[in-house]
Image (cartoon, rainbow, N blue to C red; front, top):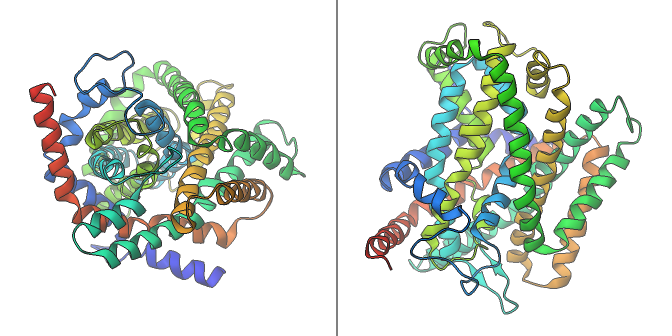
Length: 469
C-alpha cells in the first residue's frame, strides 16, 4: 500500500517551485475557490455575517422563520455545531504551532485571510448541499457534494460527468474518513491521554481506543439527530473551554499583545529568516487554514444538508460562520498564545506541533496543559462523530439507503477507532489524507460549474428578505 499511497500523496500535494518557494497546487486550488466566490458573491463572507448570526440565535424574530414543518432533520444551529465538530480538531492546536514555528508570526495574518476567504466557499457548497439534497421515504435526508455533483450537473445535461464525479467523491470520502476523521483522531487522543495521565495504559493503548469506540458508538448509532444533539452541547463547551484558557494566558501576558500584533503584520509582509520570504509565509498560513476549516472539500455540506429549512441560501449563511469560528477565532487564539509566550525569532521547527502549544500554555500557568489536553481529546472525539456521518452518507450514496448497510458501516468505523489507538498509522494515513484532499478537485469543479445557481438562489433570497416574504 505504501508505494501507492506515497504516489497519490505526491500527486495531491505536488508543489512546484515558484520564486524558490514550494507551492502546493492543492492549496492554490482551495484558495482560488475562496477568492472566486468572495468576488462572485460580492463579499458575502463579510456582508452576510450579521444575518448568519441572526439565523442561529435562539428565539429569533424574523421573516422566513423556520418551523418543524420545514424539510430536514435537525435545526440550523445543530447542523452548524455538527459541521464545526468535524473541523475543530487537533489541527487547531498542533497545526498552527507548526506554521508559526516554521513561518513565524506572519503566517497568522495569512491564516486569517484564508479563513475569511473560506467563508465564501462554505456558503456556496452548503447552499448547494440543501438545494440538491434527497429526502427519503422514511423522512431522512441525504445531501452533500456527491448529490449536487450528480443532480446539479444533470440539470445542465452533463449526466455522465456529474455521476462520475459523484461516485469518485463518495468513494474517496468513504476511505478518507477512516484516516483523518477516525484513526488519526483516535491515535492523537490516545497519545494525549497517556501523556497527561502519566503513562496510564501506555502498554495497552487498545483499551483507550475501545473506550473511545464505545463513547463514539453510543452517539453515532442513534443517527444524525443523536450526533446533532451531542455536538450542540459539546462544541460550544469545548470551544469555550479552549478559548477561555487561551484568554487567561493572554490576559496574563497582556503587555506582550501589542508587540505580537506588530510581529504578525511585519512578519506577513517583511519576514526575516524565513525561507521563501513573503510567498513562503503566505503559503504556510493559507495551507494551515485550508487544511483546518476544510472549505472547498465539501464535507460540511453533508451535515448542513440535513438542516430544517426551505431556503437553501439560509443554510449557506449559517455555514459561513464555520471558517470564522474554526480559523479566525480558535486558530488565531492559538497563534497569539504562542507568540506572546514562547515564540522566539529564528525558531526552525525543532519544537512544534502540540508540544509547542502545550509549552506555551504551561509557560504561564503550570496546570494549563490539563484543560488543554481535555480540550484536545474533546476536539478529537467530536471530529470522529462528524466524520462518521460524512463517511456513512458517502457509503449510502454508493450502495443505497439500507438499514443493514448503515449499521455495518458504523460498526466498521468503530473498529477503526480501536485500531487507530493501537497501531502505527503509516501509509494508511498517507492514503486517507490524500483521498480526503483529492475530493477538493471534483468538488470545486462542480462549484464553479454551479456558481450561477448559487448566485440565483442568493439574489432570490435577498429579494424575499427585502419584501418580507
